[in-house]
Length: 43
Image (cartoon, rainbow, N blue to C red):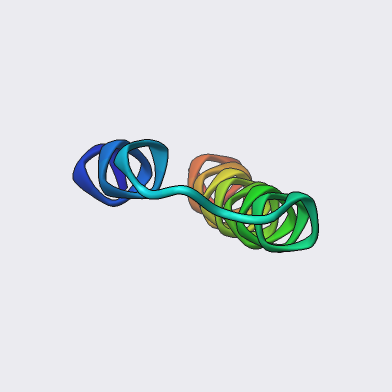
């Protein structure tokens, strides 16, 4: 994820594209957090 974000930072993206990338990564982080929460509640 970090290399992907760094790659996007180097590109000249439009405001709409930046918003889409931000939203996509926010959903990825939320998914990872939900999976981690579900995994740790299993114990």
